[in-house]
Length: 290
Image 1 (cartoon, rainbow, N blue to C red):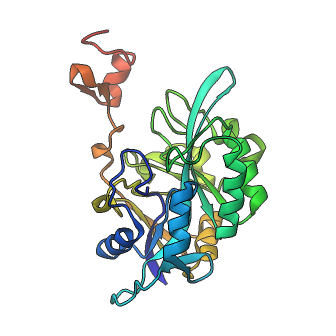
Image 2 (tube, helix red, strand yellow):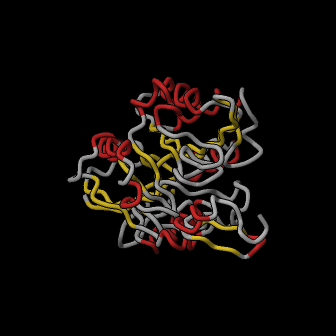
């Protein structure tokens, strides 16, 4: 079955997010945008998880749908359990700030993950919790709960909060995840880059490049998404991502990278925007204020 999926969104319990990001509205807007499979986002937040358990019912294996949400010609929106986690920690003498998307195959797996993570940080403070946890250890915790979970670096090139971020990231997947690199099957490109830009880095040839909206409001759902032709189930999606099977994972839907917040360099206070070649000329120093 051919369908579009947007895995990375946020609920009303995340900071700087619309209070309208509830399950009923997410279901409606996914249909408006043509998104068949939508990430729940924020499954680590206790109140959001309570709403997920109350308002969603099990559908195909690893999927959920809104109770009483039928009646649309396209059928019900399928929800997949996802959450973004912000890991801030020191490694190799530097402060690292890396965001990770976690996919889980069941409510039971989510509850076990949350129990472990609640011993490390406050999951109630934000839908995207901030944990003083090495992402390698996050992967270890998540995969110990279930080998069916997926651990995906989010918006890989964001300067401050990503695996390859210039301010607080790493130079390679191996440097970041060490022996757990073999379990990293996909990387999210982010709004400010697209697959063609990422293909220039040969170390990414072995992973699947996905794109998601990172929506904080309803109209942003589906501004980036992934198109599959596979079984409509968690296993179908996970297998397509793990194997890079081009007959199952067809392509991504892309936002214009130039419109992304981090595509161009610059200095906001000086109202300055620089293309990469210009940044190199100025050695990444603002020519107006130094």
